[in-house]
Image 1 (tube, rainbow, N blue to C red):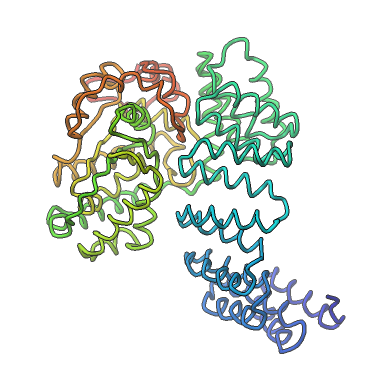
Image 2: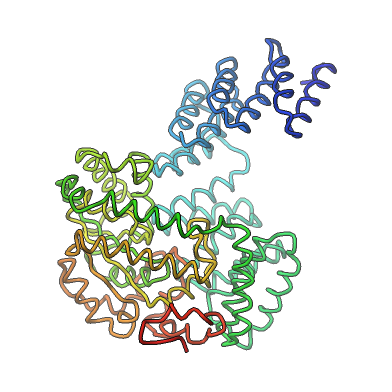
Length: 555
């Protein structure tokens, strides 16, 4: 639509003021332009954007609602309002907005696609799949993107066969569609098919030589040997080529560190890991030791023995929670236990954290006033959602490491549940964390001193949980597990009330996707190479003598 010249000039001037921070002046012009008329919608969009910028969320909501009320069949306005709801944590309201539009326009393929994205974020996997299927049925453009997304959804639903089928269907339509190729390569990694993973990453690099994520992934499926020096040269060249993309450089430096570690070139590995973590510090919010201590104090104060006793439900749902520090052996233990016929691996489930955020947020403050009835409903919803993902096993593991923060609540919600803490020597655990790229959730992981601090706070919190309900917690030491697996696993299975099964010692042959940073290590069978790897990195540990037990100092 062509705009009248006076309207257009005023709109340009207002947007310039908006960009310059002259918000009051911009608002005055937007309000004038938003008077009833054929171009009112354009001005209201800009006004809503200004209100969001100023965190005037009620006014933004009012303006966006006015747009959808005046033009209820406009997909663009519906999307603006839905995106607003989602951005302020009201995802269900965003879903309802698309459902409103689809009542009026049931054949709007894009609305079904957008609805699927929201359903997926809300853990409504079946509803998300149905919405994707509707988008395909209605002939959405770029259908290969939909099939690729469906593959990712099936993967989260732990249906590896259907996930692969969807990725391959996307590639039948568009053979060079890089997102589907990358998802399929990742699927092959999760399935343990290393050669297919490598082939697909290389195929992506033929299509897009600057696809740094594929190049970085080539460092992981196999141990790097002297014959792979070409890969190191490619990684180093890509670091230089990506000077304007620090996130890319960060990932490439982590891959270089892993390659040099494989080659036992520990000085070069140290330099690469330091470079990666320095870049991580620019990306991730700074770690705050005092705030962490305060947060852990709050958990200890709220979830006391008396609170847990008062709030405990009568639920018979009996998940197996495996938690502790990241990189402490939880994936290895889960894979071993999942080789038992009575146990299925749930992986790092987001289900409980999602339910808590929806029903007991903000956590932990709101949880303090929760009733048994509320917690009982959460147990029922958790069980229903997990059974949808893993329908045929009597026991399911939930291996989200940071669930240790929620153990007081977990004990109250699931009195029949079992909790396993994985522990690892602080030196090995710290270096393993430092060698891994993490998102913002582990802001401590890019600094060894901060890792040590967080490790110690985690131990302090576990000591509280042990004092409150130690009979529900089984502690598994990583070093003991890799050196003497059978006695450790016998003890764990007895704790779980299960008979011994020799298959748990042959776990690397079991099928199933692995979706953690330990994706390749756990498929190699048991070895103790990682147990004392810290000894190779004296230059990194340096003066961090507090990493060692009282009677030992780092070599």
